Image 1 (cartoon, rainbow, N blue to C red):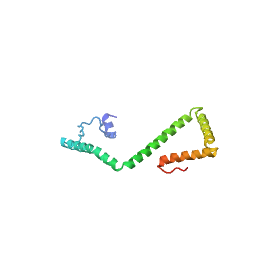
Image 2 (cartoon, one colour):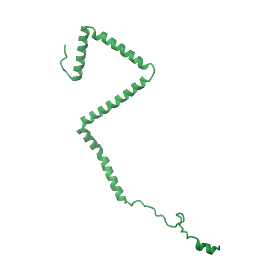
Image 3 (cartoon, rainbow, N blue to C red):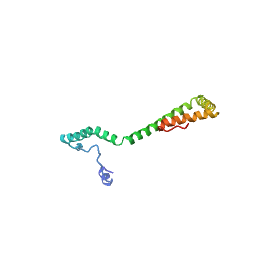
Image 4 (cartoon, rainbow, N blue to C red):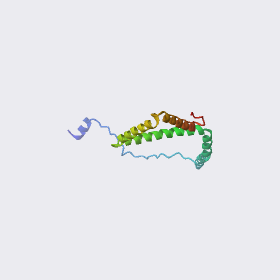
Length: 145
């Protein structure tokens, strides 16, 4: 078969041009043009906001002083308890520390019972001491005698 006959009987191929061979210009995306005046306007707005921020915060704190202080104390107490529990948990993992703390607790409890709870006179002394501390914390109330 000759080449001419082969080309006539051969199915026609479609050619797909390669992407890399296409010529053309690549268009760069330009950022939107903003004038210098717009940037100055934004700068003035930010500067004005930052200039009034201290007075705004001062007025806010003056108005809501009690709730802010209360919330701060609650958050501080929660953080303190979490840290304390983490420290106690880490101390509990050290060998012989946990049993030592238990012995100290048992010893103090025994001393407290012996010192304050066995006799009526020492129970009265403990009651007077608790009343004094209570009156100091809650205000001047008449302690029970």
